[in-house]
Image (cartoon, rainbow, N blue to C red; front, side):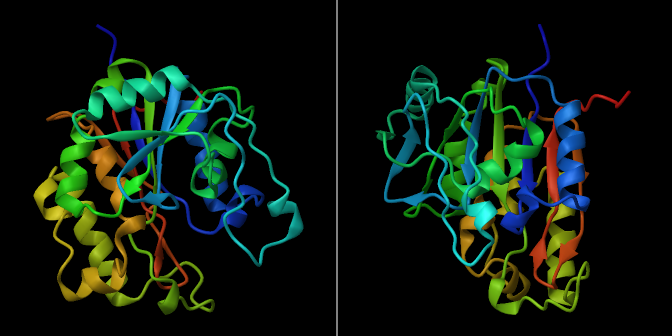
Length: 262
């Protein structure tokens, strides 16, 4: 049997990473060169929350510009990847008996395309998004995410997009690539839990550091969809581990074998 397709969580940070040549965008381009080409991509983005579950099921998802205050060239950016309605139905099948709406309206938000622009710049691979159900806590998201594990055996890249540390109100633009003490502590704790495959620990977000690092859960939850797809004893590689502006963690996690660069 061939190895399951890798799963990947990426700390996406500032939408301008889409257009800039920086430490983050260069890392993402490198990872794209190391990833096997998937049949399709399922993105769980921090930027699509719904009541209940939904998966994009249109043949041609639109590029959403779900932000304001950025340069015009970012608002004009397009990532014209196709969708895959058949695979959307497969996702709904795996999540049954939970009801999953086959969405025809959302498209691809910047949590998806800011990363995919570097991983797969030709936009030739089908992409779907699975929403984050607001009504579930972290443990419930983890249980749901485990049902998606068969997709890796079917050549699908499960791609989580968010940030382990994400507190916009505490950002300090003068800090550059350094984190507040609480942010560093929480980030280090998550790194340890990921290495130890401590899934129950990852769901514990009720202490002081967690409340500062994860004031709202939507940027943290996509990580659970990737770690839930990891098999016991499987490779886990932590990447791009730094904190920007005091309170935005760019930590990323790769599940599965990583191809060496040539």
